[in-house]
Length: 465
Image 1 (cartoon, one colour):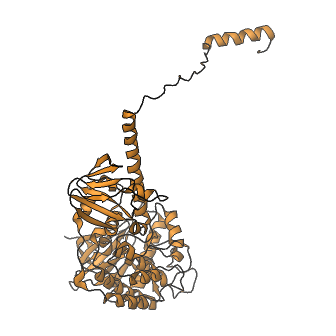
Image 2 (cartoon, rainbow, N blue to C red):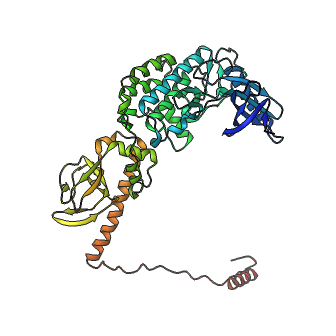
């Protein structure tokens, strides 16, 4: 006999989260396949946690059942029992958008805009029903093979039509921090504009493969969300039209009055961009070059998203042998990393070194901003594959990418200075040998002798010396 949840027969498990499990089920009354989200309550569960989960399920059941929209998952039934709670909802044979936020798995731009356009319409509808989602993120947005969109998980939603400050559906501090609006982080009263901000973060991530604000800890992330401006997306991905910078700037406005008034307004701007993009122009990302860079020691500490950014801001060049790549005393405007081949580095017509795969050239002029001129000549010894990085393009890259470049360049220079010191030492005159430092050594008396001297002093004078 197959297992059941309530009246629904379980077909298989289709997802699992921190607190709940989602199953594909069949309704025996009509044979319809549904999705059921269930959480079990054990005897050891804390009462406060159980009450919170029950409240979330109840909220999702009450609010979501009144949302009838083609881009919002339909909820049919909510059941709260002593040992479990579950929600029966529409089943979507699709994938969450968090599967398309890695840089090597980004969707074509025209598809991204179409998906977010539909999300705008769904959120606009929810707003007119008085519902704010409060946890818009890629994991809560599903798409099928035809890019049909469904927003899920209204368990954290609030009913903005309720006037009472003791609104029973309000749970403070909910949401996913990276997608939270500034007002949500500050704990201010929320309206539909918080969802539009979160959707802007989702759009930014789907276009670039990175979040608009990244940090090493929560405090730094919160500070950036409240105070910093996100880098323009067209600078992170040159395939994105610059008009998207304006749309995302408005969606991510910290000032509520400057942000989009509603989802319909944001959808209108997106539709204008969508029809400017020719679908046939999309070219899949070339992953072969990414894999080559991933193997180079120079890029060892770069994250994947930054490595894809490196490919976007640099030029992949093929250069013949016996070609002067850089000339001593020329003004610099780029440096580069050798992908394959060898070069000779010389100064004043004297050979300094031979460099090969994974080595950087031209870095001295970049690092020496006070005198940005080439300190050496670089000539190819064989056909060369070379990644050329423009200084101007690097200056417009993300903070994280720029920081990793600077650390890698400084590390390369320090390593070469150490090698230069070794070379100079082999050809230099013997160093002066100073006299060793004389250190006065204090001898400690044996412990037994020290005790005897103290006892003798006390016997003679009646007190210690």
